[in-house]
Image (cartoon, rainbow over all chains, first blue to last red; front, side, top):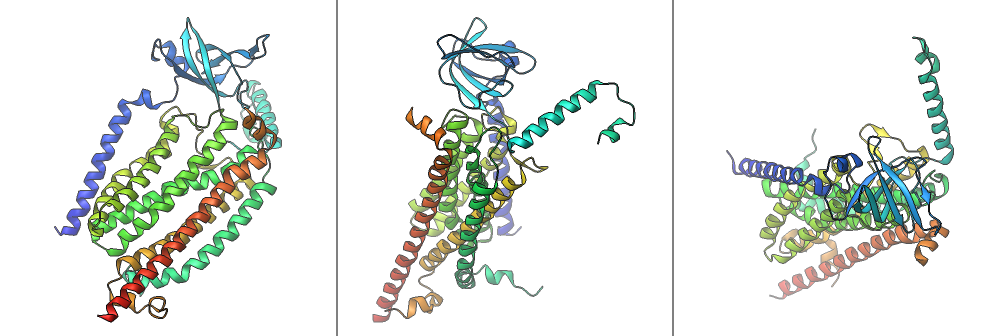
Amino acid sequence: MKARQKRFLFIAVGLAAVGLAVALVLNALDKNVSLYFTPTQIFNNEAPQGRSFRIGGLVEEGSVKREADGLTVNFVITDRHKSIPVIYKGILPDLFKEGKGVVAQGKMEAGLMRADEVLAKHDENYMPPEAADALQKAEIANAASASAVVPASAPAVIK
Amino acid sequence: MAINWFKYSAPTTFYSLAGKLIPWFAVAAAALFAVGMYIGFYIAPVDYQQGEFYRIIFIHVPASILSMFLYLIMAGYAAMGLIFNTRLSAMMATAIAPTGALFAFISLWTGALWGKPMWGAWWVWDARLTSELILLFLYLGFIALHASIDDPRRADRASALLAIVGSVNVPIIYFSVKWWNTLHQGSTIKFSGTSMHVAMQQAMFIMLVACWLYAIAVILARVRSIILERERHTKWINELPEVKHVA
Amino acid sequence: MWLDIWMRENPITYVLLGSYAVAMAIFLVEIALVRHKRALTLQQVRLMQEAGEEE
């Protein structure tokens, strides 16, 4: 084997070893690398007890209630399987909306999270308002036609 | 094919070739930046959720892409230098590092300015943001390590190892939003295509090309100085017109 | 905080000044540094050459 090939092999094996080591470490630290826990994980007692952590999910539709002081907000974070109620006093980010992504940090108290920070999580889709409207209408129409009894040839017709 | 690629990988030929190419890349970069900004701010529509703030994407995403690709190219050159003992490879790796670091910084900076109004925080320690910060530190580590060793050949070898080992971080940055729960959204440009509006896509693509051209121009300019410095004892350097005539 | 209010009232200015102007400034500084390094290296190489000729 030439010296050049030896060096190449050395680098390739070294890189593979480092990659494997990093993969194992990251795999072991999985819980710590993730920014938040889902409500389902919390119900499975995977979240830390007695200290502050983050919950992530969607703001359940119809769950946002403001208290009389105008600052305190109650809402529910859901992952479509389980939900966790949250209480938060402070200014909400602009993108905080029902049905949209949210990450709240705080401590659990008897099944309720007292949050001291609420962040909005947005998706990777960018489009003008008109396109978003059209998309929403198409979705509603699709849902309506899907729930109706559809003849076998229907998909081609709808398209 | 009769082209001798090794001819262009010799510092002698590369030096003059780079000198001729730099102005073209620089002018094209400036023109495309102007076009990209025009499309990005006048033609691309507002976003249905984020209004005007999403326009940060036209610099944020290209800067992030550049910071990751430049790292891989730098590590590739460093590895080539180690394996083939070629002079130019190590010089290229050294020339890429500062530009890569600046793009990593721009990515983090514009990301923070985007995060504040949209997420509600300048910074969170999620996997995407943290791994990009590590990328910046890898660049800085590479530059510092190379600068701290006096013998250039030894400096090349030591910093090459750091660059190669650090390249493990790049796929982690890319896949972080898939592997873990992060506040950062998923990738807008996927292997399967993109969901973006056409004018937004165009603005981002043009800005991306502009950033590439800028990076190539500035890296070539830097590597020319590095070639001059490292080969200053050779005959061909002393016969260069810019060295010879001014006295 | 005043900055939060200001950025929502002037989003375009915020985006242009905060992100694009900063990025352009960084590019300009990098270009200046690269040109400076070029001038400096050329000067050094010339000095070396002159010293060599005198020997």
